[in-house]
Image (cartoon, rainbow, N blue to C red; front, side, top):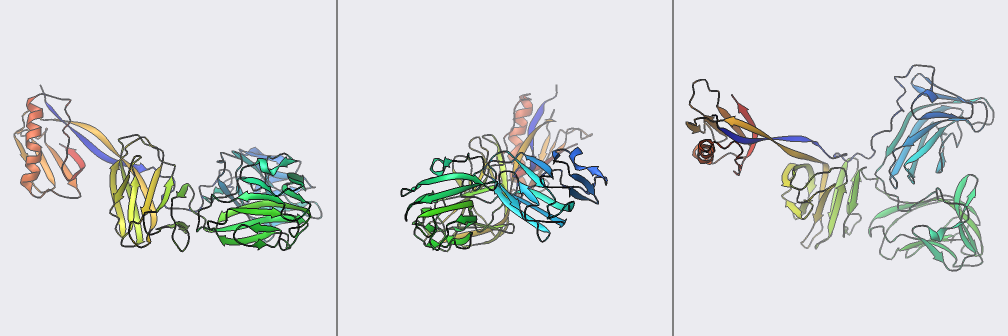
Length: 500
């Protein structure tokens, strides 16, 4: 009866991270590529497309051509599969009879197409959004051709839970919404519907009245951009106040203000007029980090550098910086899912780093310290528990700030494939080199000869390589035990098994 030696052949799986190269924008939604669609095709015949009113909307020369004979006409696209609270980017190129509201996103805003380019960011409040592409002008018929339409997840963070007050019924007190509370005793702080937009209306009988937005969740040291797209009603130099910072002038009818969040910047106060009695409406209130970071990645941690943010994504590169001491700078992605005991290999490329930086990987129970070097790095570890994310941590335990800059992080699972090898009458175990072992049953046809090839480090000698297997192989063969798996615990890894 044949005896067998059972070995495990390892191979590396595909990358399980959604965005290993820190791209700023995610994959494009389908049905925007018109180049392969026949001219004259009615866009409403395509998946997820329909018409509002009675326009003519066809594909011509790889572009979406919309001809409107009056108002309230458009080609509309139903975008489904959005992730609530993720920020999305809509962009396009347009030519023809353009206006400020040729494109709109239902419940969010209109996008200006003047100048031939349009771009718009919005935070998803539901899993779907409807995009409207029209041709608006002072006279009809009007025609616009659209190309390069792109709808992608950005990875940007919006710190206002609902910038457009989407889905909030008119008359709702804003203080019932996440992050909002009263400031003083205003007459009202209601969300109102005006000009097809949901706005925050402040009605005050004097100064020190209005609504306040909590911004304490923004990490200290992070540079953020605070915007209000449209402010109407009573305006003034002291209409908005950032606690611990300064008054913001609303006289221009909008706000675009950048500041570094500090511990004393805990709220933004929205007031009426010049912080006096009056009525003022605010539309599209947004607070976002100035550096747009990679989609599918998150960032967190307990410490930031003295000069700014702890995680800065820019052009496919991330720099993690942490304060002297024991503070942490963390980035993570929710993409991979693996079980406890899974063997993983993480690969990352280091562009630059400080000498004392401590680079760590989370194994689902503890952070494992990795000796990160400049250039390409690989590190193998086992998941200590079931998990659905990857966390990378940088910290300093010394007297100086530390940093590391990376341009990719990849994660792959190491798979083991059992292989039975016949060893009826093992006669020799030889090691031709410090990296190979040959097992032979002594038969002249060589049918039960296998060669095990090693990667990375070699044994210190051919004798060590031979002796490592000799006893285990003979024991397995003599016991006629086909179920026994020889655990290979040498300082080198099996790269391949070739049987002949």
